[in-house]
Length: 309
Image (tube, rainbow, N blue to C red; front, side, top):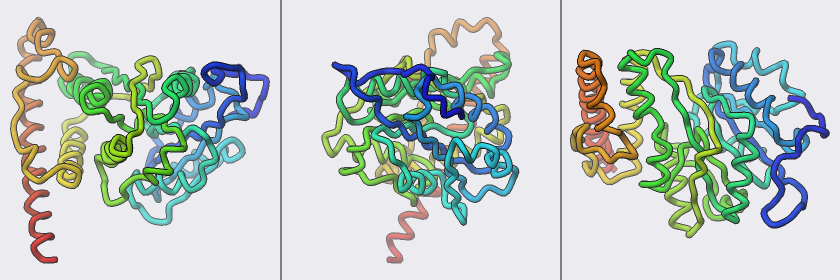
């Protein structure tokens, strides 16, 4: 990333022409060699002034070529190296300890932020005054006949639904005023999934404002295999065991009853390919069973853990 200070200056603080806030971009990565080049290219293309950006890549003890890919960029970003794999939330906390920015911008190693991502996020955060802002996450199928890719588009990261219905933002695209850390010091490192939900919930409990900025966007490639979806579904279920009361989420949600912000069932019903509709339904309910089985196992394990204390 160039340090050219003549680059476009991006947004000014709301209500005036004062100095641009310093923004720290935090990206955790574990074995990210397949997606890192696109991320680094997207960060280099940001229209925010380069001397007002600090980029921290938190490597969570990768075993592939991640560090080799990052090495040429050491002059324009900082690499925070975790000695052991502790999960993405532990990696984010390690980066937070090195963050200098007044604004913290979180994204993931498999995302590609739009060129105005930082500028848009800062504008939205300044318009709000402080707190947290979730930006949009666009998952774009390569093959629209693929039930796996279309499923991930619909349910992979439902950022608009999360923000409008549950008032939280996935860390794939989340902007945080640094003053939030005075009340919520970081992420729960015990979690492998759901730490962003727990962080936003703690911020809401502290009375901090939250909003959604649809024009602040990152793009995310769709998952392309059933195994990838199943692994994620199981991980999310285990995270929910830790952040929600046990058994509170143990139910099957029919596609036809889902809220419109979550899934447009009317549009799905108009899909002309009946075979695709059947495959999509089979995939959805199969993955719901994966979730329920993982969730039940997690609840039983947690109950046993509490009994043995």
